[in-house]
Image (cartoon, rainbow, N blue to C red):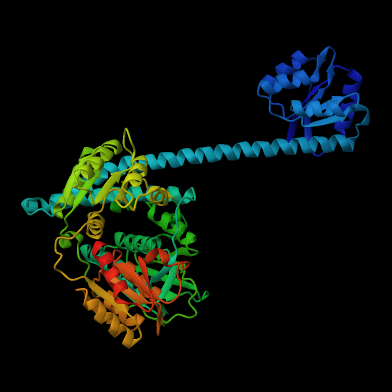
Length: 640
């Protein structure tokens, strides 16, 4: 039973004793009662003591209880107050409540039940008010934490942008080939710092419910091919064998592809890290106890984990032993993040292990509705991934780079110049506006603006609103270190056409430039993939497109289209929706995974504006398709 400190402000001895007798018969709390016989003593106790509940007589000799109540509230006394009076007056009741009293009782009508009820209600209101204050305080603390994380992200990502960017430029410069080993060490350690930063931010976002989950239909074989290809190189560097086997599983799963990859790669990387000799094996299957859950088992021949440590390894910052920390390094957050991400994907992770034999980590994930899907083993497509720097786009046009950090301006400027485009720089939003105004006056407009967000004088988010008013068709891309939930959506809403995170990825920059800027090699014909199951219609559309100086490849089924997408890069996909073995939307999903910058057009006789895939489609051609519509499509693709 808790104790309640009660202050009884009453100058009449008889009234005090009578009310005290009633309180002593109340048993739901233990009451510690202090009495004040006058207003001066009452104010001192209210100001200096911890009082949970106050009974206040309306008339304290010459002093009015209402005035005493107002003074107490002005001094910051927030506990409940029950006003006691010898007379019943409706106006007095309203006056007491308006002054801050929580209840109003007439002395000669007091009973144990009435007094008990008034005290219960008053204390309950106190608890509700206290909980509200604590909740507001917690929300304020969370807001400060989020602001700190956003600031930390920006302050760390900005210098990492310069370190990683310039190191990559030096590595791919022939004149510095004699420093390849040293530069690779710098790059690996810089990337490790970025991984640690991402781990800290991801964990904080999860704890604050700020991590965004984006569910979509994902082609399982394509995604696992990507993971296997990347992690094979990591295993080979340690002399380990990485294998992948699979039972019959659905061709597509409905999940967050980015977070799925993050979990699986974390688990594989962890297995490789703690294995010195032998192999790491990946097995894909369906859960026996759940028809809609996919299971990924990752088994290694590593050092193993003691049974009493298995529960700890999924806790943040936990590592199985100091000797392990010294052997492999790391923050101890990878498994904790993977575990929490798995929960967000309606899945789970658990582990079994034996010392000096190895470990198996099992990741289960909700695969979505799979009843109508084709089940087959995962097929790894041995398609080499081209390094972005080996496929440098040949661009023309003019780019304005806006960043207050000189090193970042120079780095991004160098990347743009390497493509052949012209570059000018500005160090804040105000100067950027001056550059734009002058360029249009000189009839030399910019094709693209790459703009930082946090800058002095005028920030990027303010500058873009002015830019879009004067130059609504200009592509303005945000380059920011802010990675908190909702940041990208807010920036797009402000007017940015895209968002690139710091540290900038060269492949992402080059893909953007290739997508937005005019290309120098205009003689090369755009490559179109036409997916249409009606042979006659496909033949007619191909002939019409061929008159527009483009190369056209035709697929009549979803399966054939996906095979073509995985073996060749197309500039445009024109697909029908209803295919004999699936939907055109399935083709678009695979295409967007393999070639995100491809222009997507849908041929349809129905309205698809409300469809969930609409954001992945650039344009819709109404059937029947004529030459004018195809001419317009080709023009859009050339500009794209």
